[in-house]
Amino acid sequence: MERVGILFVISGFSGAGKGTILKEVLSQMPDLKFSVSATSRSPRVDEIDGVHYHFISNDMFEKYIESEAFVEYAKTFNYYYGTLKSEIENPIREGRDVIFDINVVGAKSIKEQYPDCITVFVTPPSLSDLRIRLMGRNSETEETLDCRIKEAKKEIIEMQNYDYIIVNDDVKKCANALISIIKSAKYQTKRNIDVIKSLSEEQK
Ligand code: 5GP
Image 1 (cartoon, protein in one colour):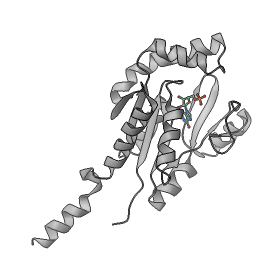
Image 2 (cartoon, rainbow, N blue to C red; image 1 turned 180 degrees about the vertical axis):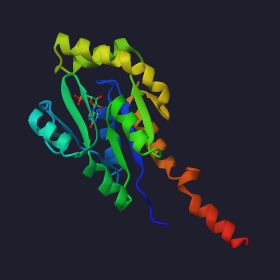
Image 3 (cartoon, helix red, strand yellow; image 1 turned 30 degrees about the vertical axis):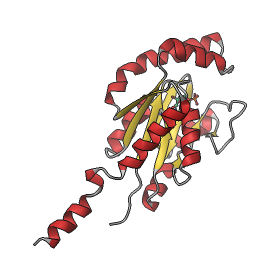
Image 4 (spheres, protein in one colour; image 1 turned 30 degrees about the horizontal axis):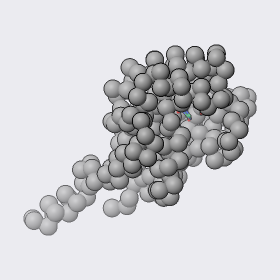
């Protein structure tokens, strides 16, 4: 049987440290493809167009919506964020695993469209930790900081729908936890039905 790529959807409060964990995981798993989302927000100082996001204008984003270029999209913090169909369909066909950094709305939508995907929620140990991390990022004003904390409070209720939860108290430890989840996925029974079929055939 041809290998079908597995989708790993990672969500977490903005500022939970997902980005750092993903960077570590991707450096250790070079075959894993990061899904580069499109967004209408401006790049932060260390962000590169086409690597972290496809940075596009609001108008362009709306044109993409009209032309049905997205698998899913959401508007958070007044900006659009969306997963392009091309980021998902090509790797699946090529049998490559893909990892997504998307919010709870996007994760829900991907789970509906691709029920075999694996969802992981990354959280800091507490909301006060989250505030400290966001302040340390130096890219937040008092207003955007409050907005991100408010959004986090709304997202807590969605955590129960995820397959896995990782508490980010140490980047290396969390990256290893995520790597374990990714590595074990291919052994799930539902991904090995052909093994059962072949053994059943043999015993006839
Ligand atoms: P940030 O502005 O901090 O990079 O991201 C803000 C939020 O948007 C994060 O929770 C991130 O996971 C989410 N996000 C990034 N890309 C996408 C996407 O393509 N779709 C959705 N639904 N959310 C996204």
